[in-house]
Image 1 (cartoon, rainbow, N blue to C red):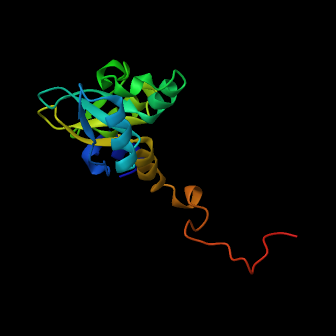
Image 2: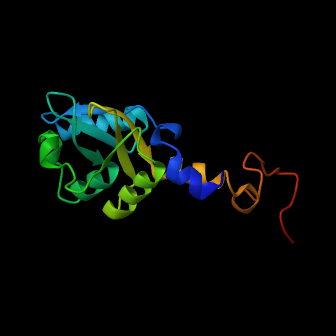
Length: 156
């Protein structure tokens, strides 16, 4: 099959999604910042008491809050989760992920199981890696592991 068919037929679960960092609605922003930093992630999934996602809190939002001063750090994360966020079921086709990323202008989408519980986070990078596999010569024009030697000159 080709790229178009795979995007229409392959489920989101075939992409390498990451384990989400989950925080409750009542967690302070400070905890989200620490969790993202410790986990090396760009977002946390904010969940209700039943474990279902209520929104995402991203590094982009932190940048916006920093401009207003540091008082936000002890506020509950529920006051700062995005209005525009998306979730996608693990069984949906990859095209649904693409639509949600585009429609909401997002970098991250929460992946949920059939019960609606957060099981992963997918971002633009995972999608681009999937697509680039279909165009290896066009996308990967150079060896990404190559190191420039100090002994070799690069130009004139």
